[in-house]
Image (cartoon, rainbow, N blue to C red):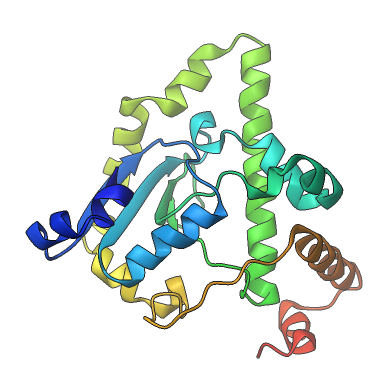
Length: 230
């Protein structure tokens, strides 16, 4: 709804500061073309989005298996079109149940496109694997009839409790600051930015290349240097 509102000139005339939406516990919505269109509205300062997600919330990971399988198995993706499905958008506020003493129980990230360097790409792949682990844990709870666990992670009570733990830190951050932070969004909010989509085959080959370097014990810095990005 926010996407359509931000694309409507009459609505924007009535809301010169743009449309701001906070979504909680939402599933995947559109494909990569929709993400690029969404980000274009963000670049024009017509739209801002904060998506709040509990790390273990099964709903926020769905539908997961088909599109993510396409990431690691491009042949499947080419045949089924899986790689074109379901991309999250906006700033993601991920709330965790537990954290180390040196870490906050949340993280904020933004879905950059395929221009990320090897280090960022490695983190993206790891995030995909972590999401897979969370989804498998949720499926296990369903199979064992532990529906209370599944519903708890998706409940308003659980979200409220986790947000309350982060209140002191989160109330010092604004969406304007996040969208202006180049460490968060890179150059993607620059008005003349042109998005780029990397093919699933290229992504899979890149992931395998990075894994091969990692198996040989190379550091992230050496991996980036090899790629010529730094």
